[in-house]
Image (cartoon, rainbow, N blue to C red; front, side, top):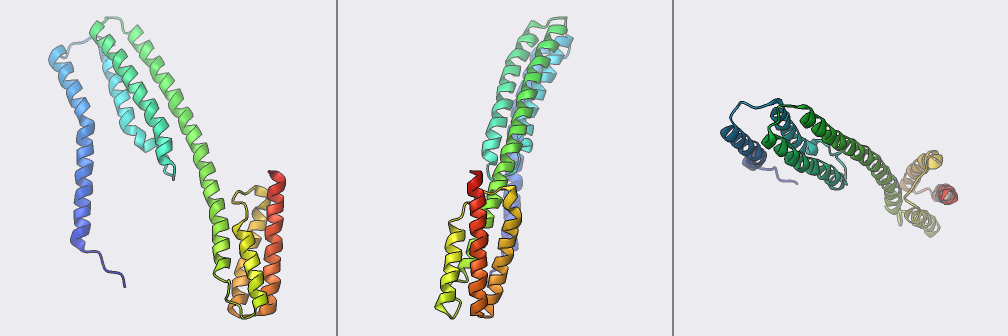
Length: 242
């Protein structure tokens, strides 16, 4: 019997999470607070267009760092995907910060150079960011597909393993063991041409579970043999593709 989690414990966890969220928000605001304080205290509010453009781009670059976690696709490899995105956003911020400061110190009355250069930098960053997002999506799809394929084999093999020793006749148990050994050692990768065969294998495992439950020795041997034949056919087709 599972013990019910105390209500006060859940409330404490919520408070801790809220406290962490507040601390992270404060940490994120430090740069903005320091930068804006220095900018307005030392420079005042009267600036040329080139300075305001640089001011805006620096803020945009920093906000992109804060937004990066929301661009990372949730998956078992999220940390790997996040690294490439964080790298692009961080490099862009430091480059933009340096370039933006140069234009702020120059304070040119002409905004064209400031705008053009910083738009180009932002454009390069956008290309890198979108390229990484596309690559991450492709990789995440492949990983999820592989995980599904591994899950299929593990699920089928584990279901058959539970049946080993359940039959009253040794000959029937021996056939179940053969089916399990073959499923357990089967390739985890898959291709579209064996999908229907894999569905048939799953259905055949369900049939085997039913006949084992009824202890029908003849049916157990027959269905185990069919399951073995289907699995061998799947493995043969996979071998032809590799």
